[in-house]
Image 1 (cartoon, rainbow, N blue to C red):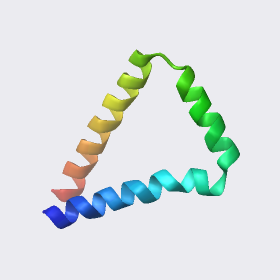
Image 2: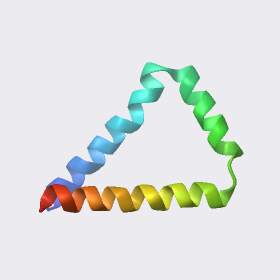
Image 3: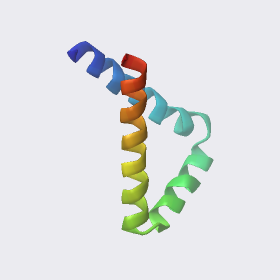
Length: 62
């Protein structure tokens, strides 16, 4: 189980690094746009992503 968690975290790092590596200018624009959003919008997006991720993990593992 712990090895699966470390693999998942490593994949998150890989995916997080793709956009800044391929297009730093677009990444910067995206981060500036994100900074303009209010806290509620960011929190809602984060919660939706967590639920989608949890459902995907459950679906893939069962």
